[in-house]
Length: 160
Image 1 (tube, rainbow, N blue to C red):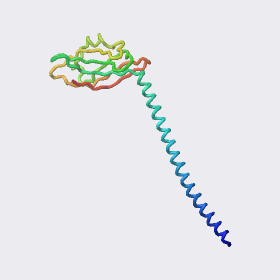
Image 2 (image 1 turned 90 degrees about the vertical axis):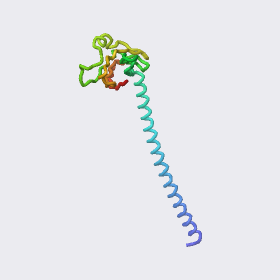
Image 3 (image 1 turned 120 degrees about the horizontal axis):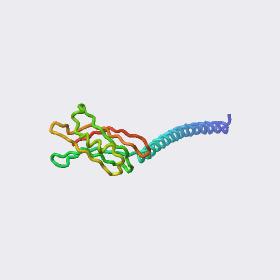
Image 4 (image 1 turned 120 degrees about the vertical axis):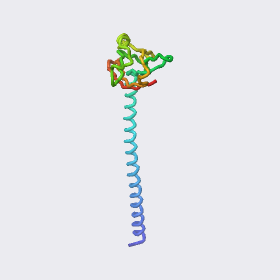
């Protein structure tokens, strides 16, 4: 073999080694690019879920229930619409072990509930006939109808 042939084989080997290194780097970059595309697709799905949830939240009323002490011996259950849309047919019930010990005055409840329409920021109050032996906290279920006609039921906890 002549010098030129040996030099040509050496250059060819070097070129093959450089090609293998570049090819390996390209594979790594392609893999990273695919991983980034998958991450971007997952992020887009999560953003879409958040947007759909927010859109649903705009069409769903949210209510809060509070047990309020007005003075030393006056207590009220107050249901407030804390959303930007109306809630219709609002009602609530306390989850009690003994329904006979309910602090709700039945005649007042039947007079006020179901509340036909509770606008944004509006509230409805109900006398809480608490005694010394009454608990200071209750579990309750709020129920209402959204403007789209869907019925919502939410369990909540209320305390003094």
